[in-house]
Every structure is written in C-alpha cells, then in structure tokens.
Image (cartoon, rainbow, N blue to C red; front, side):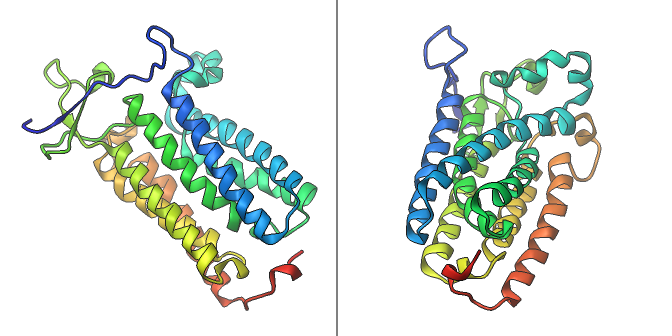
Length: 275
C-alpha cells in the first residue's frame, strides 16, 4: 500500500448535486474536441459544413443510445429486466463502448446514404479519429466516477478508489487497484495521435478502409489487453478465462484485420474522385 494514490475526487461539480457533473463535462468536452478535429478534415477535403453538423447529430445519438443499450444487454441485463425504467437513467452511469461502436456504424450507414452520398467506408475512415479522442475523455469520466476499476495492485501508481462500490472492498475497506480507466484513456489518446498522423502525413485516407481497419485493430487490441487488469463487470467474468469485454473485442479485431488487408490492396485514388 506504500505510495498508493488516495483517489478521493468525486464527480460532483456542485457539492450535493448529482448533475451537472464532471463525467458529463468530460463527455461533452470529448465531443467538442472531436467536432473541431472533424471540421478541419472536412475543410481540407472541401466538404460542406452542414454535412458536419448533421454528422455530429448522428454520432451523438448513436453513441449515447448504443453505449447505453450495450451496457444494458451485455453487462447487466438481469438487473435492468427487473427495473426497466432504469435503462433511461443514463446520468447514473453505465455505458458500453462495444454497443456504441455497433450503433455508430449503423448510424453512419444511414448518414452515407442520406447525407454525404459517399461510400460508408469513406466516412468510417474519418470518424474514427474523433471517436478515439472522445473515448479518451469518456474513460477520464469513468475515473472521476470511480467505476470500471482495476484489480488489486501493489504498484506505486495504484489508486485507492474511495467512492467505489462496497462490492470492491476487501476486509471492509477499499484497497489499491490498477487505474484501468487511466490506462485506457492514455492508450486511446495515443491511438488518436497515431490515426491523426496517418490522415495528415500519409496517403492512408486515399485507400478506403485503411484508417478504419487500423482503428479497429489498435483500439480493440488495447482494450483486450487492459481487460486483464480490470475487475469483471458481469457475473460470468469472475469465472471465465476471458471476460465479456475481451470476448466482444475479438470479433472487432478480426474485422479490423480483414478491412485493413482489403484496404491496403486498393490503389491510391484522388480524393476528389470519391463519390
């Protein structure tokens, strides 16, 4: 326990008020930063700004709805089945990135057909960059919420999550644990920088599928590995070799490998000819 970080930060912005809170502030900050990044990309490629505004609406709703339903059905369905009204209490926490990923892809299929009139892979290649920075801020929100915490650790940077649930106590007290949310946040930030580099400094954006495939492999592989130091979020996670987060990540990694392979086989095209 020597050198452990006593993490006593709460999500409250105003003492005694559950909302607004730091989690929501971080969530919105990630969206705003992602919007600004996407705005520069659209400007570079001469895409009308009204398409960006519509894209933001599609992605925001898909992220919230998909992440919430992913948490409900993948991680805590028995509880929500008994109390279905709790499904709508998003402010209490409980979002799953795998659910958000599926919902965003579905939303972007409609966006491509109804708004951009470009191939779905074109928009997926670009939207994953702001998604990565958004994920960075969401995990920081989990950190201030004392949720999605890591397994007990004696490392000097271990956190004592004072406001974590009683189910995480050992002998009646909270113990130092891996700050798994911080690990993920840092990893996602470097994923964001890597994708940004590929977009601006290479011809990756001119090969449909390269950026999206790279994102799927890099991000979900990192998620898979970090899950080894995270506490399980479902009952089965305490007994299986791989937890729910890892099992959900595997097909996404495989999909990324296939998409990247196919993308690399394509010839570099003039971005003005993409339609």
